[in-house]
Amino acid sequence: MAEKQEQSETPHRQRLTGTVSSVGGEKTIRVVVDKLVKHPLYGKYVRRRSKLAVHDPADTAKLGDKVEIVSCRPISKTKSWRLLRVIRPAAGSAVSGSVGKG
Image: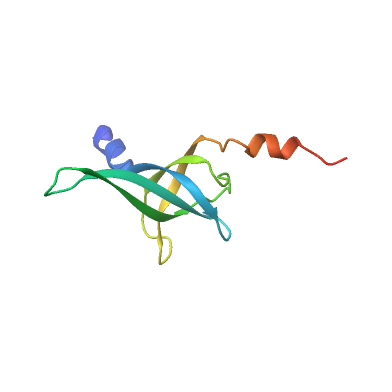
């Protein structure tokens, strides 16, 4: 019985990876998810892009970070995804903070 209860606490959620394209407002980031879809008639692979509003409660993600997001209950009108983890920080984010003028 305890085994069933543990499984029900962690339901299967959709996970996607994408890049942070903007950081707008408090606790909200915009993530661009790119995917390849096969054209139904011609068979050529076409790039498709989705821009998703993602909940980031700790404000950990920065512009350009590669992140993993997971679906969740609707938090607002447009937000129904939340940040799971930062996979790879942006290339210039660590360097730009240590560079000073003078």
